[in-house]
Image (cartoon, rainbow, N blue to C red; front, side):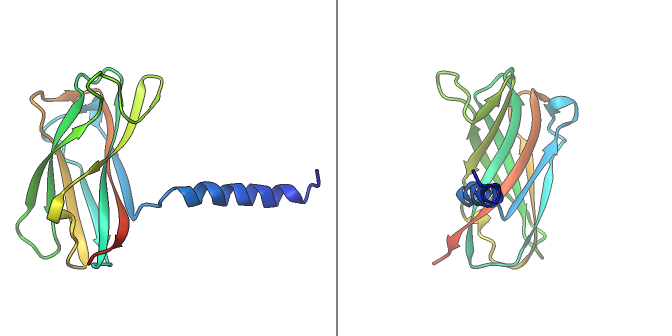
Length: 162
């Protein structure tokens, strides 16, 4: 095959792969100290919003080991809007496994990664431009929560609000 074809094929293949994945508006993950999530560790994500007419889809990112002892994770999500002195607080349940115990997401050996959509209702409507702070707090009965490696947040634009 002609050597001039390969750069074009590589470029076409790269474009094909990136076109299939929606790029995030925002994405960040935090490592958990000693792979445990204690109540007092509340990762905070600072997001600059300029487009206030867009809808956003939120995802909770988690990386855990196969030894994680539960099939879900309860979270408190705190959202502070620009200029607000009050913080909105929402409790959500994030499923991590099916009822049969089969993990959701992708696994590589003992490590599992998941990107779970989370519904924050009206809390996720960014009505004002500016810097928003979103914090996550684990709300399980056990403290510290073992076998959690990373947690994070991802936002994707999902069209325009009507």
